[in-house]
Length: 151
Image (cartoon, rainbow, N blue to C red; front, side, top):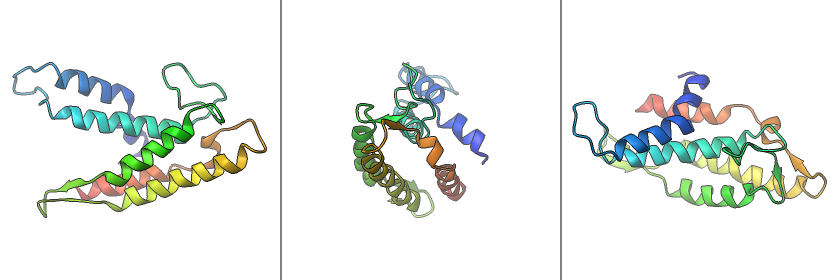
């Protein structure tokens, strides 16, 4: 899966539309079940997390508060700390084994977030803000791509 496709799938538009449609309760052959809300919540979570790790502007757009630079009052620290807690509890259904499993990319993503928390602590003593996108490559998408290929 290409990075551009991954970014489109794990997007606010896809997550919010999936959530809305799954809550309509329609009973058609192609309708989404109510359980799709959980998938939509996961997509929205990942979209916000990617935004927070890819901010590339000093000021964030109103609709995407984590797309801005990291500063002492930007909210990134609290979001990253909460995200680490959520990611550490994630389990995914392995249809071959018939059980829920913990996948390696979650551990790597936690390390990435913890690295950004550390950088935040160190950098904000010297600068007013920094742009996360300037510090990373698209390795998070590679991790997700590897997992999706296993499904």
